[in-house]
Image 1 (tube, rainbow, N blue to C red):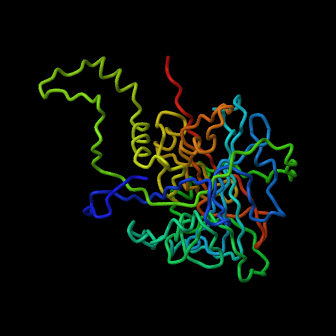
Image 2 (image 1 turned 90 degrees about the horizontal axis):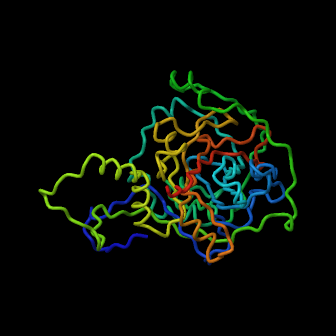
Image 3 (image 1 turned 90 degrees about the vertical axis):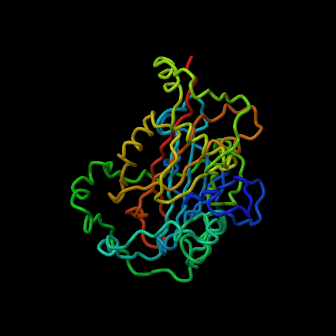
Length: 392
């Protein structure tokens, strides 16, 4: 985390809306849900998702968990328990290929609320200052606050007054809705005409649920990464005027000769501005392993790869294949997560991604075959930006 003087004058440091998560081998609370590595803890241990959802799409082997995040957002999705799981294949020959990183969103809806698009259209967006709770980090990184109300952000107190911590053990709700659930329908009511007309353009065709597949026994599973708890979260704090100048920096005279067009082109082609921004931003809080901002903007590792070009162009994240709604950014992993997961194990042929960007259904829809009060799982979008290879 960036160091700063608590007595410094206002405006000297800039605080963003991004919550940063930090890994720890120890946890003050044994019920913390959010973590790196380890085996997944499902919303309902008796009803895990199909193992097919955690198989590598390249080699078909079972993958291992990279991240488990308590994603409860009580103010945005009241009556919803939600959890995110990011899996990755450990086989080195599967790297840099689509389908070797997958994301699951677990959701259990206890009370279905009827959407009110017209009301939502008139609702003004809250200011950044109003959206920040006093203890936002308590939600995502601590115990679940399901059934207690509160946070709109799983890293802390969310946008409310209570705690909604995705890093803790969920409590049982006081009562469950027993009414017979109504089938979910995709509605375009309240959508702008242009969006309603083009909705299908960015939504993949509906996919049937994967066939039920039991999970392999422990001895048939690949070795998991060590468990590291995500018990701490802070808003990102940046120094707008960094003063650390490298010792080997060279200051040119004002009347120095301009570099030739060839030299300038060679320099610019060797430097990805997006990567430089990525590196500079992470350098101010080097221990961060995840960056969280529901419906925010991910920090791109590059704008020149397939994922970077797509997001930077405004085409956005593909829509939800389950309900037909849009997806939005929620969380991303940083390279420090690799350092934490692999630790000092020199036998590992390390992971090679620069960042993993997770996009989720903005409606937090539940699977069509899942009733109220039951846990269900859907695959969400994983945008993997791979580490750039050195050019020879």
